[in-house]
Image (cartoon, rainbow, N blue to C red; front, top):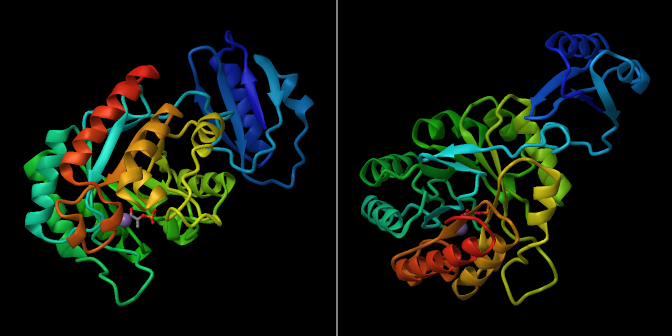
Length: 338
Ligand code: PEP
Ligand code: MN
């Protein structure tokens, strides 16, 4: 349920509504917009909610029942877009931000070289996995902390902030020492202990959609992070599993406008995992921006055929530059900048 206050509501009236919510056993979530203050009720309480108790209070314009199970992630609770600072820009404002780099951090030289190239091509942040969730236990699992140190060095050299995956609660503290954005991978989207733990930090979180998860599942996972006090959550559509075998995953372009309608959190598209083939990455990047995505995360490798992971879907640096050009044009056409 949300309580929408009248534009002229006084702060005393707002405080009275909050006190009432708390005495009914719920938590109050305050969202102050330009026009209206909205107070959301969060949590469970044995006290049944009676709309009329709130609608008759001073300064209240209306009371609205919200049927969605996510609250803090919902646009009803927080109508204005959330913006997350990244390298002097804000993920979620009119500028499209692009996170680019290799799937895995392979060596110190590789990640430093890639960081400088990505910066030059117009990326906002550097990606690279030091902990890799691989289907086979015999595949390259990442360089771990050494990889994180190389990422930090690449940040120093290029000025690009670092986005990297954290796979386990035990790694959160360590990854926070090196990363600017904590990536939660598709396979961990419903690792609730991990979501709780990253929610206790104030580090930005890039939450990827599970390959068999619905949009609502994704929003419920975001709710875990938000409910722990971390408001900096970006959602990532990275393709889902379907019967289609022509591509690695099926990029769900629908999810972008759906998420933009349901939530205030920024939405990022991953056309690399979404397609699995480098030749489809740029067309799907264009589609995602046209559909309203706030950013992209893209895999780039200097020699994709030699990549330790995800080479087939990795763009070469010159292809990435071309993608950026095309994305700029689409962004322009839909009233955004890139
Ligand atoms: C990745 O970003 O390299 C990755 C493993 O992504 P996902 O979790 O979406 O498969
Ligand atoms: Mn990858």
